[in-house]
Image 1 (tube, rainbow over the protein chains, first blue to last red):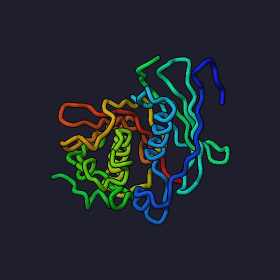
Image 2: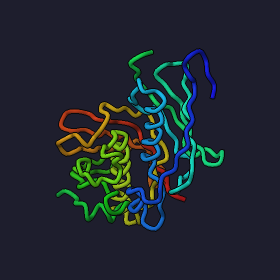
Image 3: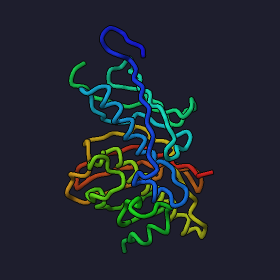
Length: 110
Length: 143
């Protein structure tokens, strides 16, 4: 992890969506794929863990590059941008990018 | 005459509680207006620790766009192609969560681009006059 001064500029965490996640039975029957919004919810949770003083206000852009399957471990990486209201993120499975994007955030303390 | 949930289920592959929209109020070739109260359902499958994040507004928007694609395909006499959410741009959240909103959600989609294959929709999720979330959604054909 890269540290500059007292504030870390990046954060990484590993996650997996369990096969019994309630969204998967209907998304889609017989062919479960983790809904993009469920991945975004995990990214938002990672942001909340990293920057407790910040809240998510929008998504500048996100691309769902590859499907994520249930139980597939993935890493979420968050990286602070020069602009203090933006955070880049990506999700990878075994090094391959599955989701990438840029969040908009609002922080109590800058 | 609104299009009810049973018919929505024939237009998109989302099954069970993941079929989030309750009805289509109106639609034409360029736009669709849907409504839903599933955001208040404790069994909503997108809830996390009992809360439904406002991020899920974009799944409501994506499903409205997919239903629109299904309706257009049906009126053209072809099968509705399976779409998936490929991208989201310029998305804004005016609230943090949806489960504490008492009134039905209105989910609007405006087709900006696309004809049969990939499509881009401007989506607005609102309640009454209050906008909750908006963004541009790209749907792509599942290959």
